[in-house]
Length: 304
Image (cartoon, rainbow, N blue to C red; front, side, top):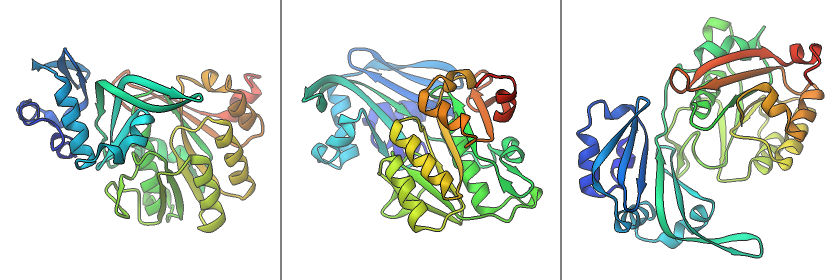
């Protein structure tokens, strides 16, 4: 998986990273012009031996775009580019605005390369809470950025799709909306990451539109997507629930109290659209399970 990232880096940086012991455990590569590059590995930081130059970042963009930076301009304007393998490359620089919208990000000064992880079985501990009495519970997986929620969502989708023998669950059709290409990493119609044999994927489409399309057209039992929260997402979730589709979503936040302060999400909770909330952190590494609770319990306690 890391090979997809190493192939787009300048040769000397790529060689140095290859020589790091346990390089397979790298989670981030941070490159800032005028500073030494930083490798985040197992919760520690390692500094590269040389200063990053503007030419290094331009070379990476050229490699990503196959010599046509214009082809990825829309992704750059959104602040990140996703490459094969689901790796996400965030960019910072001078933002050019027009009519309240981002027209361009120029003079890029830094990059954060987040390494995608496919960890088969990482959702094992939460599956008995998602699948209960042969039924999928509508579930929110909540965590701050960088705590493994996308990785765990991917594995949960794989297991729901393929079936979980230990729970007596035979599997069902799952619709996955992969707006940024991080979950399944589809390239030329082929997903590079395992999301199961009964999963239908819509990539590079806003989550709200993708959810509506999958519900209308694909005869799915479960719909899944990453980082919901906008008003359009809320409306699409309502539409899916009225169609009898079960739901597995992730959301940014650090606790139930945190997400329940968001008006649209609070409304969904009050309307009993979700059954479970699973909160993750990186306290003991990405994917640390902090709590698994029934939303009904919060309602009984008057939290919502």
